[in-house]
Length: 295
Image 1 (cartoon, rainbow, N blue to C red):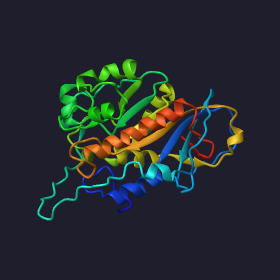
Image 2 (cartoon, rainbow, N blue to C red):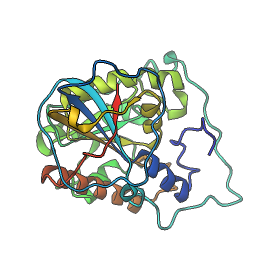
Image 3 (tube, rainbow, N blue to C red):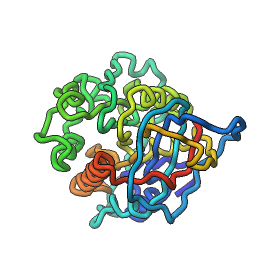
């Protein structure tokens, strides 16, 4: 994979690249800390992973300066590896990607509203609304999108909901919805990298304000954008008296166009997300070994 190539092109990704990606991304946590050193490095750099991270016990409470943490874990690496990845046939014609679309191209489409609340269990974040979703005014509205099936089959909802029921998620199931970039496009590749990265601060502010237990990125390319905007800070855990954290989790895009990961594989990723949520709620998740990242 080329260094600058975005992973959201999951039609062409293979299971080994996904495995490698999950080892690098794994789980993050967004924190508010009570006390920090008076001097902190401000040089921007990428997060490096430590393959020996573990997840066992728990901790949480209250606090006040935004901090991000990254937790490497081999355990997450195996969660979303497809056991029977679909490989494109030699005779298949590769679809030509669209170029960057100026805002006026889709000015007739309205952005989708966020459905958030305070202290929700999970907030799902897509890269941006798709054309079909914007046309009907509801999240993950494409007829071949697997999002709503994954929610139900994983046990995150007790029934299979329709896209038109998206606004009911926070109250009924403690689940929120948002997007990194508000404006709709037909394809993700029509968004420039600059537009994506400039949207990161707004997303993090939403999360700091709403404080969900888990922020789940729906689409692997989003995590690369988030990582590129974070500043690593090595701070001993003992410097933080108490904190309230949001764990970051990534799943493959639920778009039906992403054929590398079949529906059953996507459902399995959502099941692992649910398992993480159960551990967090039961006090069985230990984030003590996570290095800190300053926003």
